[in-house]
Length: 162
Image 1: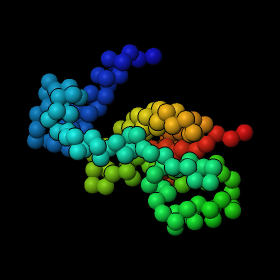
Image 2 (image 1 turned 180 degrees about the vertical axis):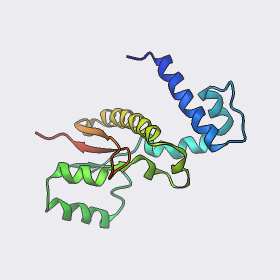
Image 3 (image 1 turned 135 degrees about the vertical axis):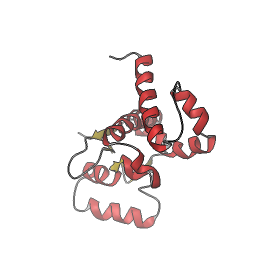
Image 4 (image 1 turned 90 degrees about the vertical axis):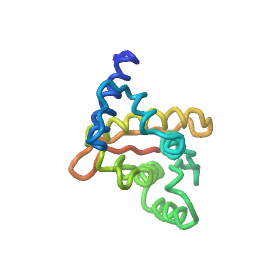
């Protein structure tokens, strides 16, 4: 298992590699990930990203959903209709599936498939922690999917059922 510092050095290298692609005219030589955060980050961005890093999961009809999946009565109707065709776990997995790059508009081309997979792993860890903290949702699971011909790196949330 990698030490926390080894993992941090790995993410630093990844962040700096991406920063060099995003801002090709800037020199990040000697920067750490924290230096990059200080130079290019903002509290606004941190608050904006908190929606995906620590989402307020929603319970509906005994199922768990990402907050942007169940936003109104039309969404609840679509979930209920799909539930007539298949089981709860399949409904949750289908509606909650998120391709990492789809979370971002203009910036989605900044990362490679491998970097998206890394972000999926980080998101999965944070979502698991959030679900565990939400005691009513501690039976929920998060799965990361590998990129393939049909899908990019992604993840989904569902409740564990016997």
